[in-house]
Length: 640
Image (cartoon, rainbow, N blue to C red; front, side, top):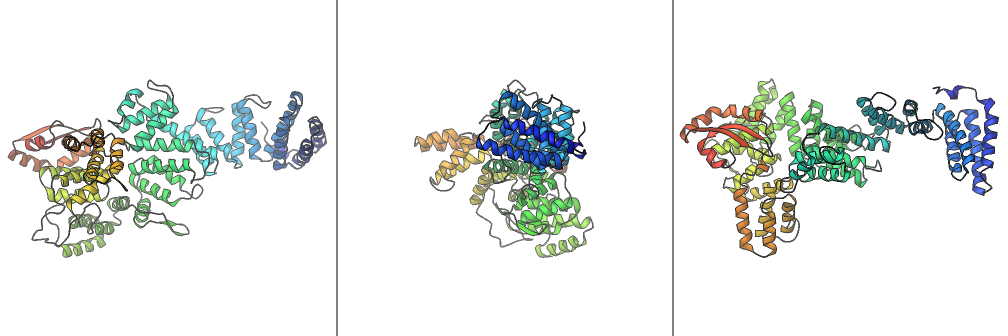
């Protein structure tokens, strides 16, 4: 197919074509607007053929299209022939819109052209090459579906991205839809979609099942018909209520794929971005990458999304640059833009610390800053932790950081050095949480509490819930003063700290925390204002918390005693609520256990011998461990 028509001398055709156009237009009628349109089309057609003027070709094409709507069948057919000639000349003259229109005609087999997917693709590619970005998106669809070319998913992905970067609305929405379909296919399972939907019900809220149900309805597989509304419902529920990262990614893409504007302030786009933010923060690397792309100057030029992208990369595929930018920006609230610092409108110290700790752990950089933050009181009842600060500096010093060595000596001189022992702060957060929990369950409160408080200050949901339950059981916020470190600190009130931790966990979707907060608001008779009892019980009901419906019914019936009895039963049943546990894999648990096996063995001999078995975690997760019979009976009754 010759796409170089514009280079051929067309002068000899000009008079014939213009005459034909004039004849066709004279047949339209004598209305004033038609006469004016005919005159304009004549002029544009002449410029198109005589000068290879792509813009004039497009105007003439549009004029004929409008006039043909009111023409009779035979006359409209004659106009269509002329429209196609204008399109061919205009496309050859590098008018991308006309190249794309020709591609559409070949793809559909319309406008007098036979269906020819290969020809359609060649015109889409021509449109894309001259930066008509919808042509790139059309070419991506062809490659995704294998129309006119062998199916090539990676080539389709590149063209979708190119089209969206060119600010094509079709390119962006189709790219989101492409990613959604790709992610859905990757998440397929053999689980029956209706059974998955049942496990996603309010009383279970099993995140993977919400996702499986959404995928089933989105693709129309695993026993159900395709239903876009139900797919959206389960993706949304998996994100908002079960707080499952992959569901947030899917739900966000659903929003973007239905957007009708590229404006990031549009309600649909803001919803999609918010869902992807949740997915990114909950650990889905794909959501972070999408936000990183959306935040680029050629897209939404949004420094907050860029920051989240750097954070996700630091967490999932770390480089020193990404960790530095994420840590500094999330701590200070200022992004290092190309034209100077830019305010991002907020901070997140927990994410900042995680980024800088990754910097320290992997690249032996920023370790002094991380250690210094351990010497300060943090939110949520975390006291200064000299032990952990010294541990970080010691690790960095051993790897050749002379500045860390000097800082370690200064901290030792200021604080008196390590008191007792500590859990290595360079370990991953989830592993430190598990070790701290073992410590607290086995009675090593100083070491376990120190790490658990710091993890809770960083926003680790499992640590927040574990620590709040410990405070509820009477654990003091700070250990008793020692001769080595008498201190004159003023720790926060234990109950205030407990409710702050429960509130934080409840805001993240922990049902057991939500019902406790509701009961606390009831006892305080806080019936109005921000976060009142009606709001708190509404959240607990939304999360399907055990006892929430009974409590609400009792309050409505003004049966205070029944409400208190219901609450006591609920607390006993959920004392070690599995929803507060992170989903630790067996290998992580085993590595943690190896560090403590000897101590546990010695203690077990003093507590009735050792037992081994399987502990059940969130959902269907399990891990194998051993402990003293006394510990097993005390903490794992019915769950071991």
